[in-house]
Image (cartoon, rainbow, N blue to C red; front, side, top):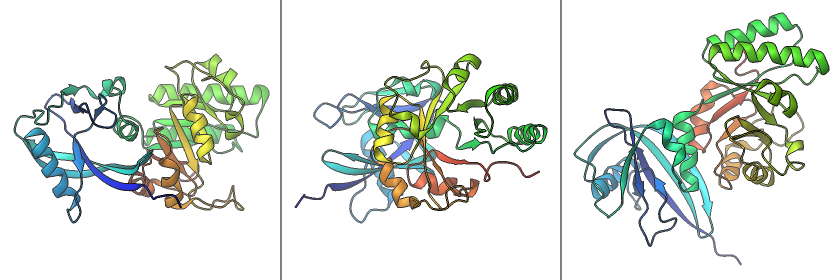
Length: 316
């Protein structure tokens, strides 16, 4: 019988200075993943409250007194010898001067430079939670193009900043024209845009591509340059590992709950979503019967946020 992996709950903090820079600490020699950069914090002891653990760890490691604020994300991650849950909190404030009291190097990093630092797998979704949108709109099938474009404009006006243009009922010239019009509106609003499945048209228009699960196995290399978004729909650990091997920027995982579009599918539920989260460090959106009210729950299970059609598409 296989021995169960030990479980560890780690508390970490996003510590920001007056210039908006974020503090990272480097893991010291002799520790797992030595040399990588991480958000400061440490293990929660048995019987200890999460907030108390974080205050204690920051006092011991950095010599600061922290005031713990809102939850950002909890990331379940499986390593060869343990299962870890990294719970990350924002701070409402702190006093003192951070110093590496345990010999660890420290660095203050502008938020937009965080991705340049080599981090443990559990910390990558934290960076995404800080920098990337928590909603990913998937467009519905267009019954009427003019009304569809008007609804897209309303969604963008309401703050949507990441869009997957999906219209499986269209092909050829009709699909290309719709995609071009949608891309123009997203760009005007400053929103990121990805085309569903159409790698060649995405290359032509200079936008991202959202790979269908059926496309993953047939790809050996990332289909677009590093500075253009590539995402993937995934339903299994194997598909997630393939998406990560292709250097996808994020994945959409589901279905979390039953949906009208997949009535016969077995939903993952939040435990199933978190179980898949353990296998990769990719940012992951939850999809399937979700609405903005579910974003906090997604973050509790390691999700970037939610992806949705009906839950994010404005009513006519």
